[in-house]
Length: 88
Image (cartoon, rainbow, N blue to C red; front, side):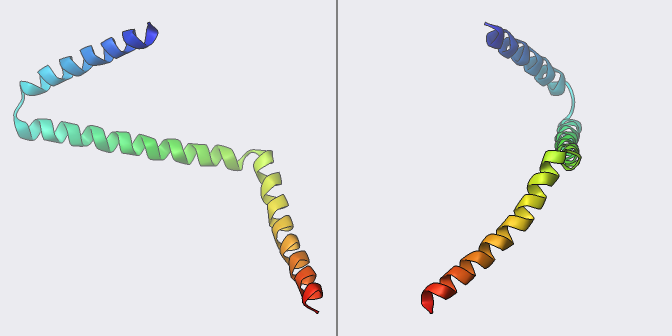
């Protein structure tokens, strides 16, 4: 029921916006819509940047990063030596 109410509110807002935009000339409406899209893209980029900043501040990230940095080369060396011994 809450979803239907939100959908109805969004539809009402959309209709109101559309009606107001129809009162203006086409170039003005195009400029407004392009500005809105640019603002949305900018907010998305800022959100992604803030997420990455928060990720780099978490100790779990750095522990996992260091563990993988050490484990992957170690596993590769062990596999190389093991395969070399099998071939010999």
